[in-house]
Image 1: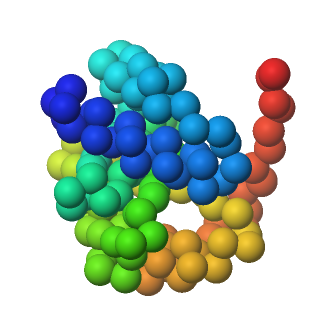
Image 2: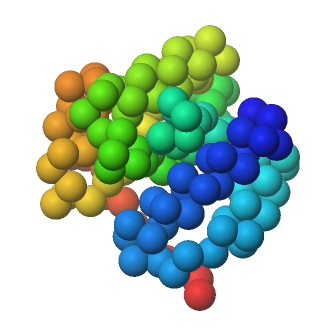
Length: 139
């Protein structure tokens, strides 16, 4: 994604953060996103006219000697919802993951986020009951 596209993605990502209670930080979000994308730690897709964004971390998977693609953020601006942008972003990411030989495409969301859960289920994702997600917040 080009720098201009990253700037558009950063604007949507800043709105996403605000949606979840973070303070506006357009310059910090843009700097962070550029750093993450340019370092290769994060892949970024932008939908529509900067109407939605999806970020993915690609991590090694030693057991399969391939990679796992982790969808980290998926957000569509409220005015652009119900037009299939989130589904299109998911399909594009899945296509790219397959083309790059990924073993798995994974994501996580809050159990109360029923709209997202419905979207993910109808897009082919299934809940893994045998996996426990644990966090150690470092600061």
